[in-house]
Image (tube, rainbow, N blue to C red; front, side, top):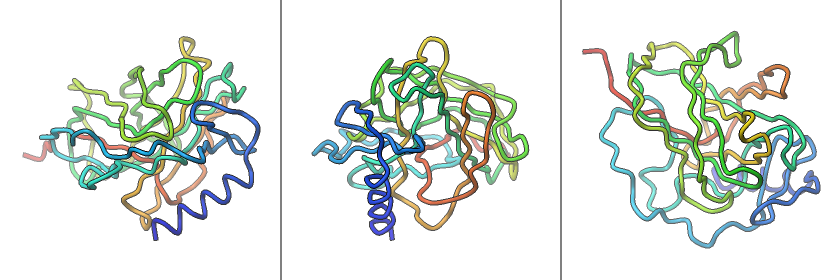
Length: 228
């Protein structure tokens, strides 16, 4: 199922790519929403699995895989207005915690393409199907190259955000004035091709809910179960 879905994505991406080249020969689709590389790194094995001792609030990163945390070469575009893409494109995905929890860490599979090597990771409440009130925002720099694997944009030391079971929240990636020329890409996961997740995009003016689909963007939210 995973291989079939990713082959379909690859075919669609190649058929509709625009002329914009970043590291590893990355290109963007005509609607600018998808970034691809034809050939990623030959190495997809992480040097070591991260020592996570926290509870899982949400996770579709392949931490248990012997190789690759996520799929290397296809993902959603993240860009600022002065990037090679020439447009503001932010992307977010919705998740719903099963239990009350306190957030301690966020891991996002995001790769660098061109411009400033930095993105903004945001955790937000839901606002009618798109990101709303922001609960936390963090700049993460030194991203791994898109098409390689398996660096993660990791935010740690979070201790002030509590999530409510059954309530939808959003993780989204954005840019600001310090990284308006950033072009990055958020790879799809390689662990679940059956459970669709809601995605939304921001074009510099407003958010649009693009509905639910697979494969999902790859990320994890970790912390402490606070039921007890």
